[in-house]
Length: 449
Image 1: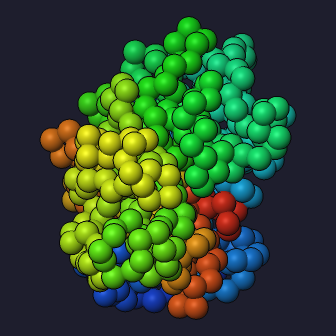
Image 2: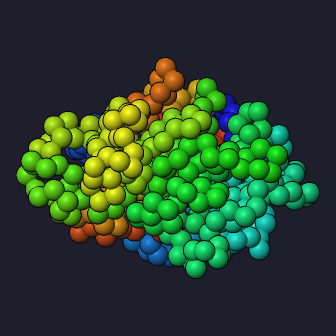
Image 3: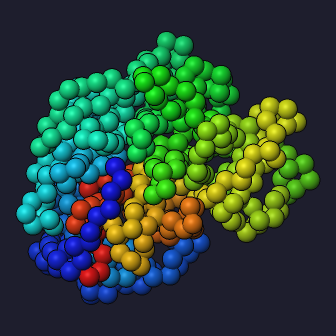
């Protein structure tokens, strides 16, 4: 859903301060402890502060004090407990909807009169097959299950008039796949003109046959009048799917794992799968989609190296070219990687971006402005692990700037984690609401007054 929101600046901030004062784990100074900037955080103004936890919510992982990192002046508190919380969207009447794939339902979080207080949590719809993506358009709620997309009319916290948008999407139940589907969760967005876009992930890490399937997997589908066509291809797992302020479609992609070293005369043997290279390759794409665009997978990998092939090369994630994948496209006959447009923006390898939402002017503080909020789930196959966090990319002249961390601190020094953000959405009160499927939580971040 795309709509500008007015920031309830002072009132929201005061409410958050009041909540933190009454929380069981909120202490420390109002300024917080400065956090040294790193290449990953992309920011020098982060501080470490205790996460506010209301009385009665202290069960694990909040049975001990948890600290988070966030920009100076911001506060963060646990707002609700929602097991398996994934993607989220605000309804037209200012309630937060949260999908739960494992539970097969969508939860409805109704704020109290004191917005900082924990909301009333009820089930909006259940009995679905791994529901994930959520979107609103013209008073209707769109829900992307693993095998279909449906819409309902929405009013007053109730649904009616269920209509199929598209059925027969591939998932573990697809006969030819025999239950083998690594990326079955779907995301959905609806453009201003009513066109529906759905992400369809790849069946595996490297499965070229996805490009020949019908409907095409590892793609973004466009749905019109109940029929699906491929809008963009070579999108390994574009779980992040969003409509930008100018109406363009963007995706944030989980790219491949265990990529082989591609160069014939570099510091490793060509084709070697070496953790030192795998750690930073390939980068995760954040790309603007146009009809027919190919993001390369699994034949071309987005290359973050400033000095390709050199050990310890500096890394850059803006306007990056591709390199041939020597496992699938060694001679370039499958796809000419040099013909592909550079990827507009990106994140470090194995960040695992999930939810992506565009905040328009007026929905975030002026210090941020319009931009994309992306939930970064963190790596499973990197050593050391890539940290879970929420990042913000500013919207500038029809494109996105470099990422900066808006919320972090979920990973401990030993690499263990107590939470993993999935999505971040601006609320009607000027706060940012963050889902966490690892901790089963929704956080409320409040900017400075």
